[in-house]
Image 1 (cartoon, rainbow, N blue to C red):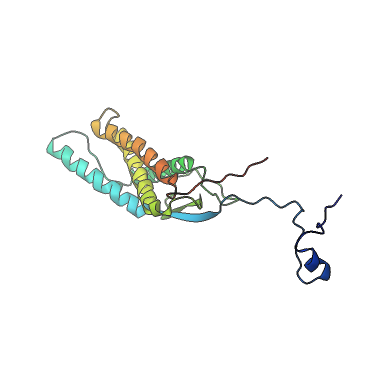
Image 2: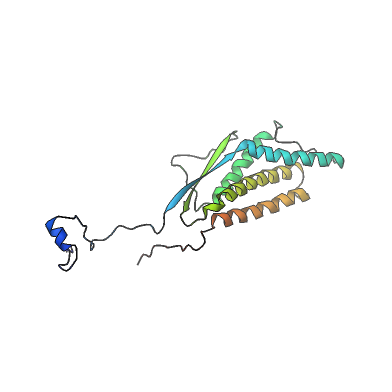
Length: 201
């Protein structure tokens, strides 16, 4: 049985006379979100990643020459290593999306390619709740950039040097710390805000 206005309701007179079209407050209301969302875009530039990688590998190469080590550390500009850096970048971009899986929005109908393909720019789309502290957005972008550089250098030094080399171990520790930083920045909330979740009952 459909419920109607009570005769004592303050809007009943206006509704009967047709002055103000007021909806029936006794009707079931559609569910509403407890909070809204905002879209954040993170753009990853390949030339910026390669620049930071080359600056580190060139310093390591100079240090190995001074100590007369037999291992030669080349930069990513070498034709034999450059395609692998793009593969490592893709690998750790997927790792970032796994860390931020609660917020990542993937366009429909887009399939991830596993081939070695050079690219200039990639984008990560995040759907962040309104209670997220947007003041740490720049720090989150920098943390993701550093995480990708450390990941590519870790893979490269593991192949060029050895996994027991101290420089490779340091990059591995930086990767673990980078994951923690990304998680902390993504879960930072506005001071004084309260997360309101929908109650099913």
